[in-house]
Image 1 (cartoon, one colour):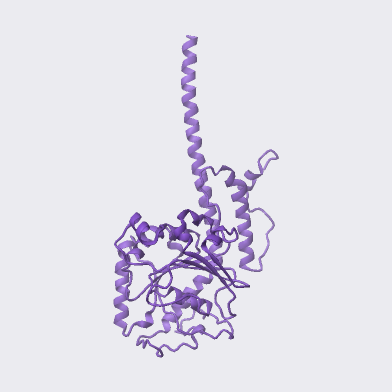
Image 2 (image 1 turned 120 degrees about the vertical axis):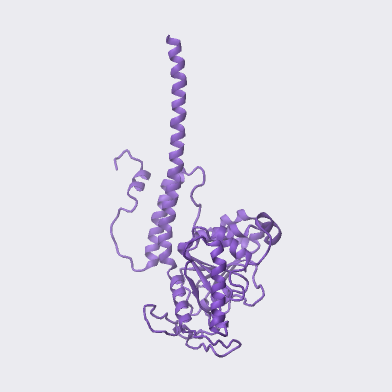
Length: 380
């Protein structure tokens, strides 16, 4: 860049020029990438963002969001991740709000008003959805055992169970929850690095609100969306599993306008894991061709307890390991999402600048034609 070129333009022209270095961890690489992106947001985009085309804040940690109806196993799966019972579970609805769960060095609880006002977590934009959401939003930061699968640099969002209701649109927002649930889910989806949509085998894909979320809140989110048929250990026979899987595919085909349906992960969550004092379990090698049982389920007995499944569960253990691998890849996914979000923000600002420049050029041309014709008439 020339000496008279503004520094912001130099940064935009060559934003990542610098000394090549190796990073000791994904967290260090992610932090450096976010610092570079923040510099571009602050020095290049913010001064010309007159129409709020770029997000004002981003969550400080990689985020994984779980969606599903009230009996799809979201809270049970979160407890499995944490290796301790933190979320209430049950067939009936047990939670009516959004809960952010993170691993920390000390226990901490924050309610909605304080959490949205805390700049550390970057949830202040949620205030625009009204006080009803503020009163149904909270944070749980917990000191977790070593056997916990959730790392420190990640947070999980547990969402309220979706319901089957005949209400639609504004009527649903006003009469059912008090806030626009679909828009709130969209807000979290845009900032999430992985989204798990869990389905209950008893109602596979038939919940009206679930279908609305797929058609409105999760549009263009296919790259980070995982569809999961959970609780497959509840099936007594293989044909019961096939019937539920086919019903789910039938219902999804009505809302996913694609020739081929995306992959549907089939898994279950064990009722037991290692005790808090045991070593953290390791996920099995997913490239192995042998059917294996996850090390995290060494103490799990599928034929003990209230459910006596007669279908083989070994392959479903492998599928759960794949889902866990996608969750633990959230920091790497965040690096891709940071670059993608920056590219989209630049494209929006560039489009606005192009339109503004075209309008200005056209306006000047009209002024020139008007005053030029006027001046010519006086000379004649």
